[in-house]
Image (cartoon, rainbow, N blue to C red; front, side):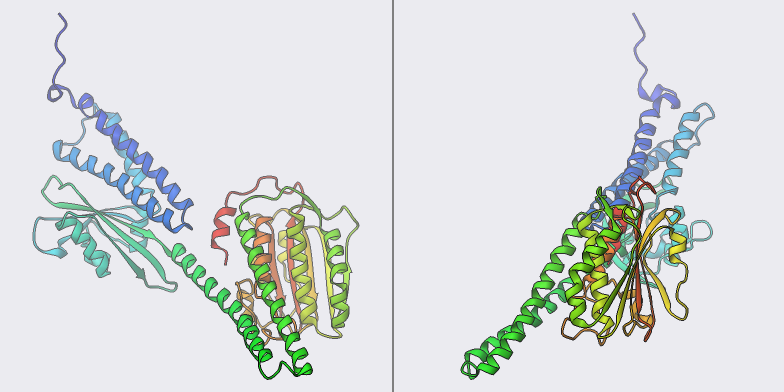
Length: 477
């Protein structure tokens, strides 16, 4: 009769511990996977919270396994179990490589809430909190009362806790502190896990959405109030005055046209953002697109007394991969702005060049003017087709350049006129250029006109569509 299997307590350590070690290693691998998902979903508020919670759960499971294991077997692993040591080293490397600050805090069983000390901190935590020395007091590392409170709740109340706080510095950053209780250590000290999650991007996106809704409602409310006022006037004393009625109807038509353009731009921006992560697949000749736009805008330019001067290469030499409707929209927005600001008797230059490198495009052009890149492509060593649109208008002061592509932003003194813009044109251009892996730059100075440069990668310059576009699209204004 074969011998009965030995009970678990009679098995050697190398046979008795392997299931727990494999569970811990698996938890570490899952934690790394969830962290990568957390990074990919940074721009999605709900996704950030869900992924952060899942990550804390996995890391907590792993640390619990380690603490329980050490409590049962405080002696170091014998040399006859190299696999166990390798698994521990792999887990330690995994925790060390997490991109979010992670700490383990321990405190003796006492009523003193400030007795917590940092017994483990990964590289991100040491760098962010500037941790020096071994087992420093938590109160000297983290000085935010909200964070200390959630750690105390996890240590002494044995309950999970979370808190949001704002860190100081040159740029405000928003963080979420997540504390989870861990089993007591071998020496009886209470332990807790503390993870800090950076929520700066999600807060910024939320603020951007709030600003967008406020600006959109304001822009729509202004023409609506004007229309309501004139309708009331026409119903009253002006209904029998033909001259006043004609003047008021003309103003009402202009306000209705402004509101229609605003709604059209909002819908266009929404469609572009929806498909911004999808690479275009068509073939577009930039020179032909410019010709079509100039022909369409000829009546407007002639009525404004503006001379439009195109300089185009031969057909077929400036072909790019792109969405023709969107590229035409880029050309139309840039040329339309140039015609509008050139003024009567002014001139607009539209140039198309093919085969330029990204470095050559962003090199300084005009002297005594400010130059700023509004959107930089991921690769600058490719060949590009560049569109330059210049006008002889009043120009733009240096301090306004960084905000030109913000939604609804318009330079002071240019918000009124016979054809005031919606403030969305350059924001639309930037999103379209981002989808086409292109770039956008501006050269301008007060009294010296302005030049906008939009450049597209030529066909064959780079067939791989970079996955980083989805991250770039969420951070755009």
